[in-house]
Length: 448
Image (cartoon, rainbow, N blue to C red; front, side):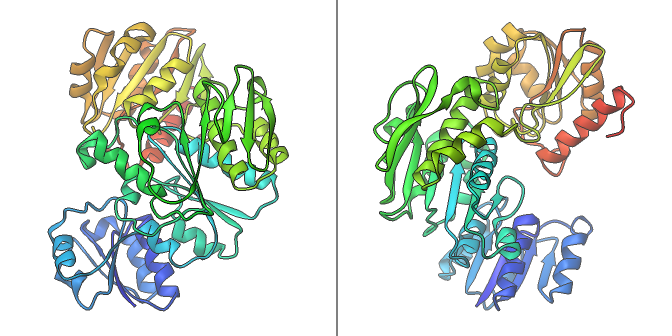
């Protein structure tokens, strides 16, 4: 097979290596200049994989049987239109990896909570003694998991809407869509198109698979779910026919295999109603996949969260610092603001994704004493939230964290919850979160 991989970052590079190991002739193309890709280029040279940098050229289509698309590649590129005209298949990197493995996949997508839920599922399966790899949009490419552990019993994947745009046959054995809210409208155009892209997660499922939705989400309740998988759901508002729900005190479950109590909400390891929903979702997916209730209970109690999602960093001079760099849309920021009950100094900004930040106006007015706006979206956010609270525009990110420190009083919380992508200044949200922590640790004279 002759494949071209568009994109030389983590996902594209891992797919190139996976297909090369399976005997394909691989060519990799990236529009970034070579000085930004030196590490990837060195790996490709060692594997004798041809590549180009600086632009996508006609070489991408020469003697090509299929094109594998990294998540950051937009489907409206002229060369991809020409590929369609020539009948060359365009394949998401998620589906490309899936085609080279027989290991069942458990997949999670949604606007918010998917990283926490995916990581929580990993802990549940570990508690059950099941060999697994956690990968996907959570920071490690699915193809890399297959390369490192081809004999795993499960791959637990976080899936983004970008990764679902070009899937056709991808069929996770158990899959969940957690919620739908405004996100990535700069890419998808409308909320409806974005939501339908998310629901493609179910499209390839067969009768022995299971599709799980949040019964409390207005859009998902109305949606016609694609695919032939069995249907289940989770809810915090009342019983469900098949799945997991909260009765006001305890999480309960009901499946063909049995029903009963899981554990009281007070025993769950992560606080907050949003984490109760994440716990219900993870429990629903695992139980639908045959994991024992005992393993689910143990992991729900013991899980302590993930980096960059409402992560406590330090308390310095009576001020608490939280890293919520993963919050890249307004709904994620809303969750963070509702979870903290002290006066807030909030840092927002980065690269705007076409979302409406005015939906946060009332909550910012109620809870935020000072708003620090930074990055390319600083003026946009300041304009949309003007009048809600005192606002400062500080262009440089490190300076913005320093400004937040100076604005905070003892008893306050400094919260990084950007509501924007990180790509104006950082490689990804992880780098942004770690820089935030570096600056905070420096305030206390601690090594990072």
